[in-house]
Length: 311
Length: 164
Image (cartoon, rainbow over all chains, first blue to last red; front, side, top):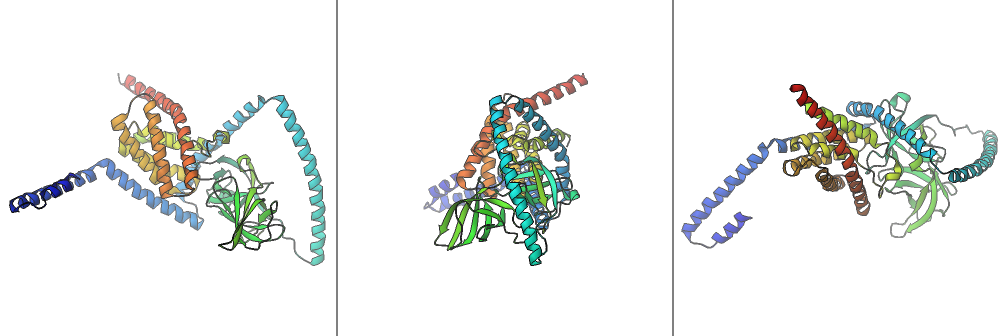
């Protein structure tokens, strides 16, 4: 800045001063060169630049491995070290939770007990209805000569840690490639679809919840079979997009996985429609969903093998 | 090389504990970033080169554990560690107030950098996350910094005593 001001001061002066002007310019350039050389010779700055370059390269390598579905030894090594610490912290947190639970008031426990009893009765009724429907389904399938294709192999797992970073809706489960978990496998529980496996290590795997900004799975309205894409938006709700303009979708409709793409099994509940939004400009309809599963209380999950149970 | 061992162990433990924090303590959708707090607490007492290197390791650990966004985590943590190291040469003092303030503005800087290199969330949501993390990290700094200082000072005293 001073350099430019000085230059301006010398503008329009006679020839003698122009020589001084040139000398000053040379001086300033030499000083700038010296300054830059000192800056680059600074050990800390060089370390920072080298590490940033290395970080970018490692990020690209990690991305490449993630896209190819292979596990990277460096990530495996770190998760193998962190895994036991994670499990230990999870166990301690469990003990602490149990300890806190003892101090709950008796009244709230009684209320919860009544609520649970009612829920059990309701579930028993639903279960008997579903069993009846399953028997009917089997007889209809036999009658139509279709093969039974509703069941798919799963791997039982436990969520050992979650939300390692506030920027990602992820969790770690205690089953990895040694147990047959594959990248892209659907993670669900008795309430519905929870997420997908994004990274697999030998002893554990990382899953991303449906609510994550980058999460997207094929979904369809169970009643009308209108298919679209269920996407996370970083909040508690999900959004069913890419529905046709005249799609038959109403508030309260259940949205299930469509099985398209042959990754997520078909028919797993995802959520219920709470709002329908028509976009007249784009000629599409989207629906806001309340997830079937409660992601904050996920403990025991099932992981579907990739490509099983889908269309 | 030897001086990196203990901070790296601390970072690994922080990464392990991070996933078991109860969801009920979340503020505006943000959880404390224990790895970031440990990184800043150690970098504050050292030079910028050490901070950058420790930040690099912190990003690597966090990226591996999260399973996503390793590059952006490494880059943001390396710059944060470097900045924390710069603070040490000018502001470092023995009480926990300076680290708490440093953690506050470094969390904001780290969050802004992260949003810049990996824009995942909408503006207001990202601001909420950074604000929540700021509050959490400052609270956790008092705990972690005190523990780190207690253990590290005790270790240094034992080394000095053994020499005499």
